[in-house]
Length: 386
Image 1 (cartoon, rainbow, N blue to C red):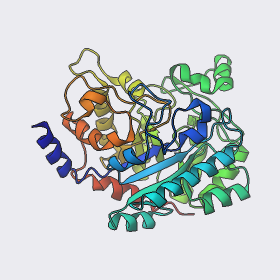
Image 2: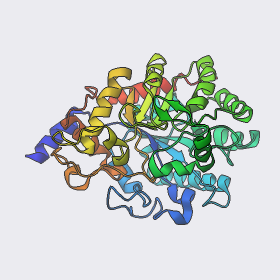
Image 3: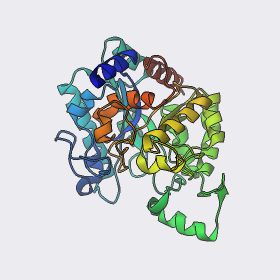
Image 4: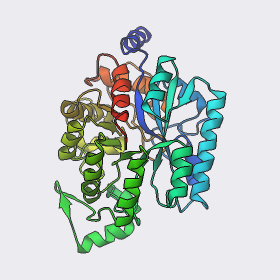
């Protein structure tokens, strides 16, 4: 009976075609010895708790049912000898995958992606998380953006750098930005009643931002401080780009600077932008009432999702899984979703095809046709012009 239910539910969601705005497929090259398993190996993660073992490979990517996946390239300066070379290697891995899997296409524009989808291809889009040590000059922009095909850039990431301030993470992860965190004891700042990093964009950061916008790069605001977002917004507004948060949770339910504020949600709505909801056990359970029935992370995800779409619309919200991003997935739910996630939880990219039926079963407000995710994302991307 469950098999029949899943079949017709997936059919009603038009082959579960969806967008993932933030997935690290090649994290081994970014974290080297600190990460277990490479992309072309069998996945190493076996539990939703395993954040530093590979959660994606060609097999699970092909099983995901995702129609558009934004691949986030990342190199950590503490684990990689040459950050630029790490990104080059990850791009080579991407092209190796494309050669072996012609059903996928690397799109460098919205129109290329639309053409691929019409041919029943799936689409990969390149993004870069953190520019320090990688996009330092015009030659780097030529190599990685113009020639390499990076089209989305998370300008600021975990730690303050010469470009600007990075948002505080929650719990022990706040130490990812140690100097700013220590300084906050002496100069505490708050926004929406949560501690925030007061550092905004630097002149160097503004200069790079302007260059990237001029090269048709979509700026991801996910890790920027409140002050940095304030500095970035005038340039995005001038370019008339939709706002983009590739992987975040809602501050209303998950208090912290790293989560998106309600005021920014309304700015996303004003620009017809995109928000990718980060589904992670540690980021979801803050918003759940533990005394209610089925008080699990699936219920918490539905709560955040429904609130998000009530503001920005059901097809402007999507998934930003942060697969291989060292975050936990979702534990097996307390109440049935009538999907295999009841046994495994959500922890690798192949689980995409079950996540949407599971959330729908638990009450998530989804578009009638999940192809609307593709259409809305590509419409927003089409407006990213100089």
